[in-house]
Image (cartoon, rainbow, N blue to C red; front, side, top):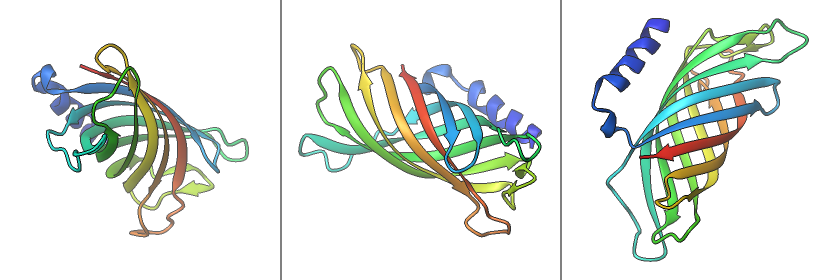
Length: 178
């Protein structure tokens, strides 16, 4: 798993840096389970736009993330999980934003985690996980280069293998767009 993560990171940074449209960091707090999550990510904006006749349009971006989850359980032994994810994100945003541009987004992506348990009481069944999220945020700055959002993320293996306890995170995410 560590070799796969290193390979993905190497591939992300081996191409021209200008191909990356954004970088992000996020902190998440477990919802229903005591855990912390931190991620770093890179994004590539889509050139496509849909439903852009009015004040709002639908667009999106690809997001690749590397994350670490840490259990805060006092009952079970504390463990960490490494999470590598790749997600297509759809975004509903203002067409001609002013100083602050609000948006809504949603996504379903793919994640690989290792190990497959965060504590003796929380097991995920398989390294492969689906990760979906919904979020609300704002772009701001002179050229809308700053991006601040709140996300609710759920990860589970969709009953591919038992146990499938899953985990949820409430996240605060900051991104910088080049």
